[in-house]
Image (cartoon, rainbow, N blue to C red; front, top):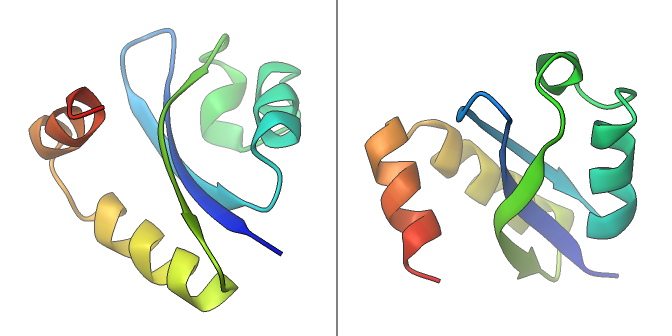
Length: 81
């Protein structure tokens, strides 16, 4: 099974970082306002960046690293695509 860490861009230009094993399903849940509390009032959201991992542990470590970054650093990562 693959795990993904993703950065969503919310409609107010803020970022949300999370992990999942199904990117499209998770995006749909966020946009149905049934996902994270943070994104419920900021829909629609779009996936701006993601990485895949073989283990949940790797994904969680990367999620933690990304969450510690500043908004500018996150923007730079997103724009590298």
